[in-house]
Length: 445
Image (cartoon, rainbow, N blue to C red; front, side):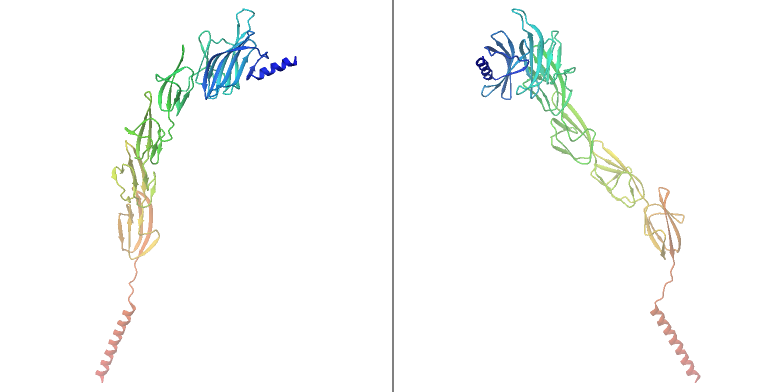
């Protein structure tokens, strides 16, 4: 008896068989393998079918065969306790397969096998079980695409299971995809009416995708957009923008090569054309550089404004960086391409050069105003010279409103005589007096 058991064990070990689920211990008798179909992926052949034993039992058969050597790497027998038929196999992702097995009760003598259930398994590429589901509803057909298993019932209704074997109500992918769209399928596929062997899209476009296999048809449309770092729609940029994306590009009505740079200040429109009538429009703005002024600025001295804009206007008049010194409120319009316009408002404040508040000046004082002023109530402007001694009040005006007041004083000073000149005059006078005295003395004698 031990010899018989040992022989049976050696026979089992000599065949690479791996039983999953309720695989029953069987005496290794003769059998016939029937391969229904196979798929090839990554230098391996995955094939499925049935193994029928001489005693009439039938189990599901799944094998992995190495392509270069044609050596069977692994054999998996599926056994639910009755007759099992592996009826469908497909790639459901880049790393997993779906295997569908129908199980029937073993008929008595010549009876008709009674359907029990279908077992759906997800296997990795080495044949290891990832997950499985017992599906009690009858399955008349199977299809696979987009990471889904499609099971058809006797009423020809389709039921969709994802790669975790969960029922899903909406099998359609999102209408908008980004950068790349890949879609696995088994059967035939058409993209915009053109037959393809795989679906791997990486060019912007509007695509109609159809999957067909025998009587089954599944169709959907997608829009494939490219992710664009620059420009973003409605964005504003302080400087040049490089546009790098796929598609036929048009900028401001002109053909544009990807990788080119847009630098002109103003409004710009990028239009991307792709497959199937695809069109995508992106509007953006390159802001002009404006130097020496900010919106709402208060400027105490004169200013020159520089810009790389197409043109500028100051208070409605053309402006080309002349010195602005007169006190008052200003509006600067800056113009760019394609109707771009932006405005800056700023104020040049009243100021005076040559006189300071609280100071005293001798004889005269000269000063200059960049605004209108009231000097002791008298309206003045521009360059002023005062040579009259007195106390003065200078009111600085900003658009007819008092902005500031400066008080100052002018005093008159006595002109000092040169001491050397004074001493000479006195000596002349004294000499003259002395001379007259001597003359008077001589006449008296």
